Length: 153
Image (cartoon, rainbow, N blue to C red):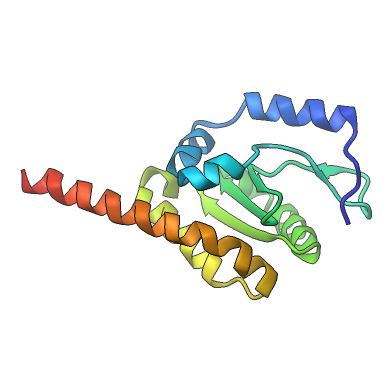
C-alpha cells in the first residue's frame, strides 16, 4: 500500500531528476510518445510498510510499471536492487531493468522492454501494458524502415 510522501522525499526526487544521467535522458527519448506522456522520472514512491521512499528512474503510476536504467553503480548494489524490486513486485508493480549500455542501441533497449513485458504474469499488469506494446512495435518498425532506407541510399 502506498503512503503519502514527505516534502523532504519530494525535494530529493526533484534533485535526482535534475541530476539524471545522460543514459536516462536518452532512454526517455527512446520511449514511445504514449509512454513519455505517462511517465514521471525520479518521483518518490513510498510504501506504508517502509519508512523510506524509492525513486525509480521511470515510474508509470497508473500502469504500476517501473523502468530502471542500470549503470555501473548497480554492479555494487545488486542485493539492494533485488530487494527493492521485490518490494515493488509485492505491491503489484512490474519492474523492468535495462543495462545502461543497451540505451546506446535502440533495438537492444526496446528488446529489453519487450522481453520484460512478455514475462508479466498478472492480468491487471498485462492489460495496462498492452497499450504500449503496439506503440513500441510501431517505433521499432519505423526505425527499421529508416535504417533500411539509410543503407539502401
